[in-house]
Length: 451
Image (cartoon, rainbow, N blue to C red; front, side):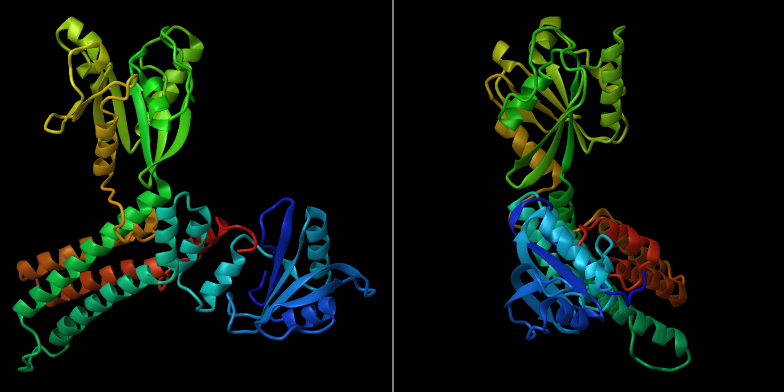
């Protein structure tokens, strides 16, 4: 599978449709286009054509578009054939192209060639896949911003500021005996302040984008009959979970995907946490505990009425069994059976929300709490980002912080410059200036075939 191969793939969605698209890219496109169309179409003009069999008979007809290199998506010669969208006819057309010397494209190979030919960087290529997979309008807008280069431009600008600082410092290292007034500690400190401000701005936009892309995993947990499934139904707005008075009704993990003012929520309802001799229920509890360990936030549902009857809540032992470091919110449910009012107590640890899954009282407080806990804000100019981008930003910032510590402790400019170099390398991973082949393979293998 050499990069010089001419590749072909169906680029439209699988199944029956009005229009089907096949994309071809590589050095042999002009000859292949002439063979299947009878002549090479004029560049960048949609032209009606018949797609021909070897004996000249028509296999199909539609539009043909030819984009000569380097002015194409991949940077190579590209041919697009837009014919009828039947599964059989597209398969026959693809076979004809393979007979003419093409090979089947791997997943993401068109975008991979665009990256290798300098048509886009790796962050932009990832945003192409994110745009296709976007689950909300906000996520789509964030992906478009990154695809058009906004994320990369801000990363490059931050990298440029770090390079400027490296130039100042390494000049002092190279010419220690020269009486040159080209660097001062005050100037370095001021430059560091602008670098940290840029980190804060980019990280905030990237975190929002990662949240829009991946969503927040919210696990609803608690004892049997606390009202977990009723809460799920209320948040989803539909009767997706069975609700009954008998404990142990929910025995498996139930997942629902909803949007909260643009914030994707992966809601996970779980079996009531208790010891059970029933093998099926025990398995449900085991799965519930597994989901708790994978949660971004746990909504631990309590029966407020039962707590009041006993005088003191007995949920402290339950909370001690939850995985450490997973954020928890206590939901004091069933306030419709008590004299309590819907309210939120952010000062308690963990925070408590008094609500009723039956009447809906307090649910607006829960929704606002989830958005605030996730750090989600609407219309913030989010940039489509992935966990690897956030990790690279964190490593780059830690390296600059180490450089600042070196400066404060007067450890010497050599250590300072080395930390800045490490920060620059981490940022370069985001745009693909420094990227391993294994990472490239992992990124593009998640793409659609034909993209």
